Length: 219
Image (cartoon, rainbow, N blue to C red):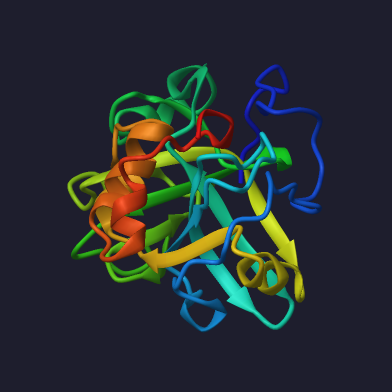
């Protein structure tokens, strides 16, 4: 994996592990997907009572989940750093906007790349996450993927939870876990707009929340 420039800081404060979420007030837990629903390809959607500015109003695409913890990337948080300035060979395959997206507060000098491909060839530098979504080896030759991808996104950093941490946060209503779609990864919607779209396709109380603000201070 290739490092993006160190001048692209993570919004919401200094780099730190994804720990110690702060909740804004006591809000009854919704009937949402629990920890059993967390798996690669699922979305962790921040509930309005999650006030930590690093994760408030975010949608996190889960890359891995096991007994040791959970790893994902925040969707819909574009930076100002152009991919062509750092990884010029990959910029032609990236969807608009062609910039690094801030994937989370962990290891922000590390680049992760997700691509959507329905028919990947063998030994082309792709590793399936789920369905049509794949992790891309940025050390591979991008020319080998020409014509095989519907698009890709490059993320600086990731979000991570240690063993048991996410379970506690889901139990206290900080996150809802819902099914993800490949087009979520490539969406050009940012922040609150993506949050509302994901919530709006749910049912019951989650769908009702889609009309609220993703920013807890505005509710």
